[in-house]
Length: 500
Image: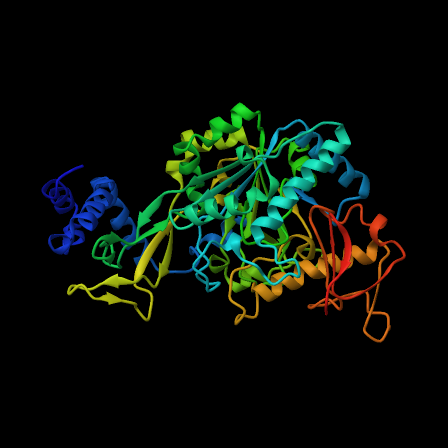
């Protein structure tokens, strides 16, 4: 390990010597930890990172002045749709997707490096329970969807198949996630097929370009965004592991969507049959002001434009059919070929431009006192996973129904959207619709028939295990012609009523 003198000299060269302000008063253990952390920060890279963060933060917010003239919707021939396609076309997509899964050519990759700060918890979001009758967490729901899609593909093609699960964590989430999976026996997945790896951490920077000390012995660090995926894939030889397994298609998604369909055969099949190297699931924007990025073209190149970069006038433009012209809402749900990811890690990753996130970051002041700032004081630099769309040779988008596939968990229940309550309602409303379609009837405490079209909170609580049904299939054998009174669970052991 480098000496304190060596580390100090390195930091002096790049104007960051303040990080050793309290080094002399530290005990040997914390001092060694701090010096090891600082030694790992390459001086010129640290200088560039801090200068870039301060410069980026100083730029005025809002859309580039000429964006409106450069913006175009995606060409219709590059967009597929669940709702606008006939049943035969959807069947062909699904058939191809299941074929790819049965050939062991499909993997899923979870982006799980962020903390649940906005949710109000200190543990990884995937460990969160939204209040389902089963008590299942996001991680368990996702693991069981993998098991079910493997089963469905295997039954169709008379084989045993595997969908490996790659999970990108961070310094904050790796340890708790690994422990959680071991405690739950990997939710009965083969541990060899659950691969955890860690993304990079970057120093958090003040507005004047100084790295922040969060403790006397610790630099404030933050994950490098979900676009840190590409560096992490290279550093941990993940793509080499995929190649050894014969993986050709990778479904990448974010941890917080309770409705996510892992290794969705319809999406996989659509992308494969289109010959796509890169694809994105999208949902129709609910209204012009909805705060979601838009998948579109800029200068003829596919990309996601953040909602803050699109003026209200552009966001409100209408297409000839009356819908929004820029209506393809991004939901962080992507398809990549392995070969495209290899090309990104080898050639394009250095070209990705970091984005600025201004946050409230606890720090120690010059006297060594811990300060929890009342307003944002630090800059986190992040890359976004979708910023590689521009490098695709054959990009496609695939529109899905929001009620069936997108309900993110981002905020505590004090918020009116994207909360545990809205996520739970979305999943239970979906299960209620599936049960009705399979022939179930629901009655209230007095025996009166409950309505069939729920809005918001479903009229009956009926939870369906992903081990029984991936997307509503196969429920008739359990539910056809039967009457139920809420609450009820349908799992691998059958239907069982719960105490109200």
